Amino acid sequence: MRSADDPPDVDALDARLFGDSLSCDVDLPVAVEPAVGRGRQAQAVALLSGLAQIEDLRKDDGGEEHGDLPLLAQRMDAKLDLILGLIGRLARVHELPEQPVRWSRVGLRVGLDAPVDVAAGERVIARLQPADWLPDHLELPAEVLASHPAAHGSRVWLAFVDLRPDLVEALDRHLFRLHRRQVAEQRRR
Image 1: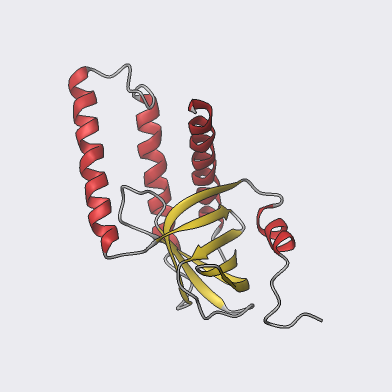
Image 2: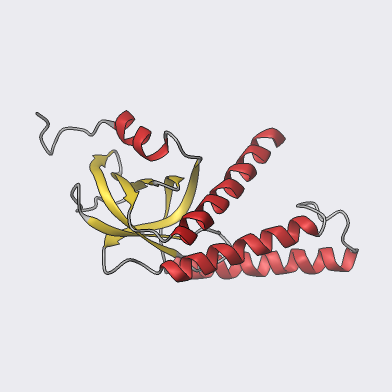
């Protein structure tokens, strides 16, 4: 019989959260907090839909290289990217710390810098910033599957609970875009 101090079965937890789902390993501003309600699910859908529209527009306007855009539009787009990145960094200074995250439509595995006092079965809100240039964040309701002290803080496995169907769909699309971006970056190396 396992005690609370025993390390969790990492492989079983990862299989439950990521085994049958597309997942991404990213560093994101994230926090795990006690649950107060079901999170801001309608706002999360709107935020993820807005991000998808922006990325689709950029793709339609000539891809990431902006090769088909007139020079003036490319310069304005680059300036807007710089401004949004700056605003995002300024807002992040006072917001969520960036942490290593493995993310799927089913849940998250988060490596937190500080120990977190959550127990298996506890309901929490996972707050995470889906785009580095946008200082807004998602609030996703989750249940703690396991929490264990790590070398520099703690590691927490969270399974999403009670997500609206449109939010699950928006998460799928966002994770697909993140995965596609990671694959493209690996190919460029």
